[in-house]
Amino acid sequence: MVTPAPPVTLSPRVSRLRAPNPSPMTLDGTNGYVVRTGPRSLVAIDPGPLDDRQRDAFLAAARDMNAAYEAILVTHGHPDHAPGAAPLAAATGAPVYAHPEARFPHDRELADLETLAFGDAEITALHAPGHARDHLVFVLEDERALFAGDVVLGTGTVVVAPPGGDMRAYQRTLHRLREAYGDARALYGGHGPEVAEVAAKLDEYIAHRERREHQIVDALRDGSDTIPALVERVYADTAERLWPAAARQILAYLLALQAEGRVRTAAVEREPTAREAALLDPDLSKLGDAPGADVIRAELGYGSAEPFFRYTFA
Image 1 (tube, rainbow, N blue to C red):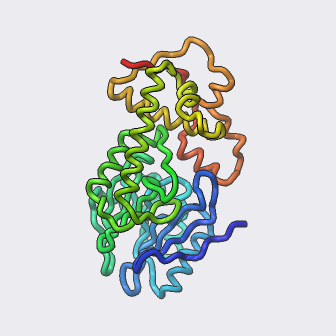
Image 2: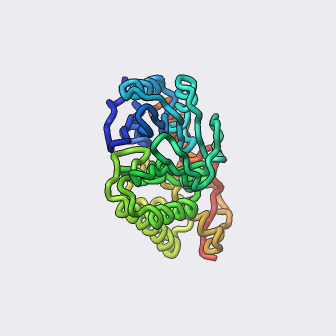
Image 3: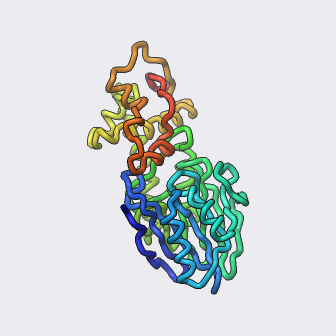
């Protein structure tokens, strides 16, 4: 059984508590954070999955700091970030703060750019859609630090998949963070290590999305006109076990291009082959209760077979 990692001190105010839920989707585990907001006060950010061990790690951190939680902030509602909020709230009496579109239990909704005063610290909430509709990024003002959830990770890139994910919204969020917070001193993502070179990381993420879209457009121009064909072309160097996830990412780009009038669709006048169907509608029953299965289902937006369309330039 995986046990929670010991707390890691990241700054005079911030400690990281990594949940014991490693998986291909969550990397080494989901990052939770404890922010000291005063001599005897704390704020918890992303209590994580429904796991007594992670709740107990947050409670132990408070005891060790001889402080109590004033609030619990949740970046978004995916199952590796939000379910732990309710048991932590029950154990501490601290209210849960979330995005107005959050569907998990919470006590207060946060407006875009709303600033919360806690003790001797201020935290600003930014609406940050793209990975999820209910995503927030939190800014610890005096340290100029971003708690980015799954908008930016310490390692790798982010899943953006319909219906919860929206590629253009995600790109707008990245540009907003780069323009307004490119001078941030630190970025604490939902997974992976902390990021010190914030502007460079945001530039990397923006460039990655632009490069991937160019690859898709080039493949369309060369005649790859279905999602399975695009996956085989654009993700040729990626392990095939990851192709169903790649198909969802490509769909997000295609929906953006279609909404902009750049791409049109038409039904393919044949049934997909077994290989094509496995990309458009993978059999998630095989996952069972494997580590990260709940996150795969939530983040990749599976649930019904994707229509077999042909995509061409409008």
